[in-house]
Amino acid sequence: GTAFLRCSKIAQDKSTVDSELASLMLNEAVNGIKSLGKASAGDKTMVDALEPAAKAFDASYKSGCGLLSCLQSSCKAAREGVEYTKTIAAKKGRASYLGDRSIGHQDPGATSSAIILEAITEYCKKTG
Image 1 (cartoon, rainbow, N blue to C red):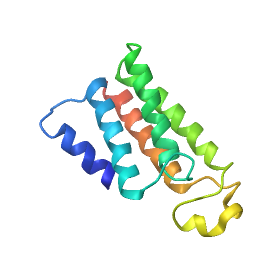
Image 2: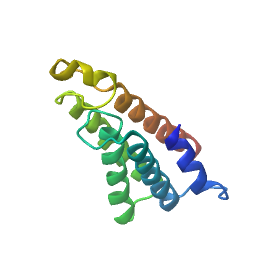
Image 3: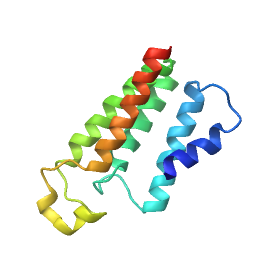
Image 4: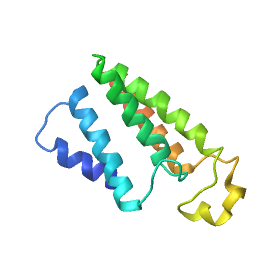
């Protein structure tokens, strides 16, 4: 919810989304999630997928890539973040009660965040 609310505030008067706006939206979403949940990368949360996704998007954007290419880079980084969550113990959320027993399992928030980014990318592919 927080991510979408933050994105909507940035895009409220825009009729189209370009790479610059998408970068602002993605970074604002990550900042909102981190602020509300007091989560950081390495806590085994959606931040482990979204923060690298935002950084990858920004790097692609700054190198002159178009929206679709930026999104594809973002998806790759998000998936790598999901895989990373398998290697760490949860520090936030319900999974944190499991301690080291959470190692070996990917974080569902990171996974769903990567799926959302992939769906947005697929939509952009189809609609141009």
